[in-house]
Image (tube, rainbow, N blue to C red; front, side):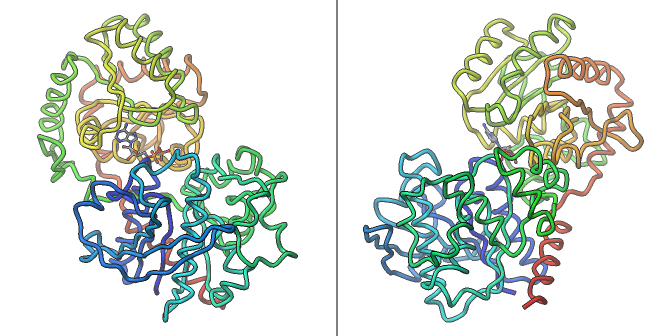
Length: 474
Ligand code: ADP
């Protein structure tokens, strides 16, 4: 079965968050399971692109409103990622370094989608499935089924995966002229709340939509930034498939980004050495429990309450633990965390920025990983931390709820709390400190969590079953 995955991010080509990890792994595992999956991304002028060889496989021009853009489709020469990788390059629009945040971002992603559809319409062989990920490529199902220009694609099944339902990519209706030759009787499918809403359009038009965890599928019905009623109406088309992790990249036995490798059978020594390396780097005390946070510093992640919760915990348990943070995001949250660092030198440290290698060392060398998310569609950090024997401390929401069992419950291995509050967080930190002091118990939990299987094999097969059910309806 031929599948095209379309997204804005894909590890290691361009990564901002978990979307990249999924798009970089799922197709590889689908191919291992006998599929023929490829990835199509916008062209980014970044390290991976500069260091690899690409062939031009298609060239044409597309119209965005009244502007004509020349584009080319480039294919990575060796399929080294375990799938065919295609990049769409549009000089002056899709040839920049950053993934997001350009003032003409909407134009960038609409042009990307149109160029993809132009290319596929001209191809001799059309795919069986077009799998779109998040709102950046949410207009594709609508255009395939309701634009005369792409009528050749109208029988191809589409799947839309929601990695984050808070962002919709809304466009005002005055941008409608970007969309070519659309059936005017169907424009209501594009609309939600008086704007063109690509996320809503994809949920309405794709044959099926999925979320990256079962709990998140239900949560969208009462928290999705205005689309709650839509998710309620369309619920029969939705399913939740938990993300996996790429065990080729996230493997403590062979991870080139950590100085000391370790196995699930004997994790203690390797973890201790990684912790020592981490503590030395950040001036922390290796004897104390190390609680870390990695992620985007935004409200969604509960990052705004971390400084207050750590401060409270350090007053309640003076000198009893260390805290380390790796992240970047809202400047006011970065500021709060920098103040925390200044207030507790030698106990708290923060690294403001994005650093893939450091993240691996933190997963490997920490004792606990804090995730106080308000919203967490799946969450990969807790899965990486489980694999590296680091106890996740999570708020029970979305994928965190589906993947972390509290160590107080039968078969549990993590720490869960219910409210995004300083109270709940500092109470959980207290539990973590007590657990750290009970070494045999901590070691037992480590073994238990490292034996869990969150590899992509299972989830990739669930997607394949979904595709097959769609092929059978044709
Ligand atoms: P989201 O996609 O909402 O940001 P996920 O938990 O799904 O959250 O995925 C986050 C991914 O991004 C993980 O691979 C995590 O390690 C990585 N990450 C987030 N922030 C940083 C950072 N500052 N440096 C390195 N990696 C980061």
